[in-house]
Image (cartoon, rainbow, N blue to C red; front, side, top):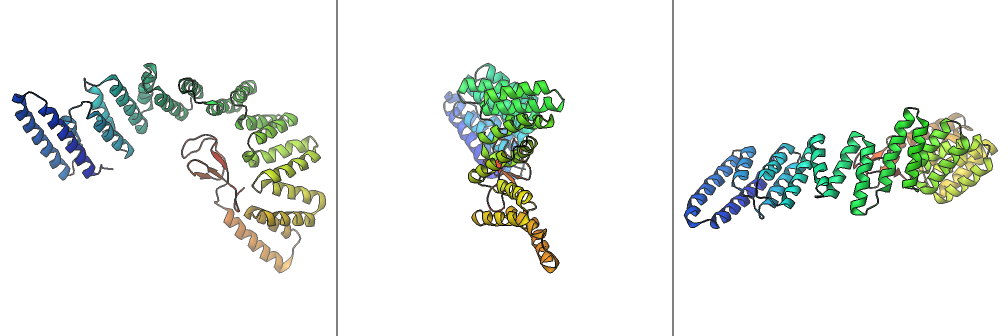
Length: 391
């Protein structure tokens, strides 16, 4: 990818004008010679541009742009432009050249170091970026931005403990709560401990995660899953119930295992009461489908069909309609059955490929749930999709 030549030409012109103004401020005896040199370099840079040699044009730009308070921003703008366009090698070269200048103020140098660290991140040179950001935090220069970058690096490296340290430092400096983020990192540590069959350590991380962010959903869901695996049905049911109380949007994730735990505890009345409440509160179709299946088990197909048909008139849903067709098929024969099977297949084709979850920040869609959005890397922003084809 090459930089737009007109943009680079403007930057070279800006550098030339800056150098020319600097020459005007020089002693009279030096003005003529310096102005001649600037003119030659400027036209040499233009010649490189016309011959589509942007790298050489950049070298000329760096030579004629005398760095002072007026031109530092020009260098930074050029470096940012390169980085946004994915030309990280050029961005790195521009920012390194800027940092090497001896007449920068501490603020200008720290800003250039921050930009260079972002260049390294974009280029995948995480160790170099981490060193620069750590140094900036150490001298308390652009610390919030540097800490956010360090947190991002730790997430890429899955170094959750250091990510927690940086997040807590960021909270101290800015006063902005990082509780939900820290809770996610502790949940990652709990998942890792559980995978190693270290139940005690996993429980400790989950306890800390809940202490840090009492309304966080993920630690409750992990606790429920671990209790479910140990057949501790009461603890599993309580954990899932707290997760749903914290955020009912996660009901489709917690619903099936929670109902299973309640059935193991022989709490049918509680199940019916909870499903009634969730059907009122939750905008999606999941609790309705679960209730229809319970009605079928208790009262038969006809009752389940009547129940689901009535609900679908109030809350249309492709998934609910697919469930209704399946119920009808159980009691239909001959040509009518063939027609219903065709309808069922069409409904499944409509649902295949539909996103069940979507990020509220960037719109990333997925069939399965992610705690961190693969698109924008935000946490806890992916929720179930509602609507006619939703969950």
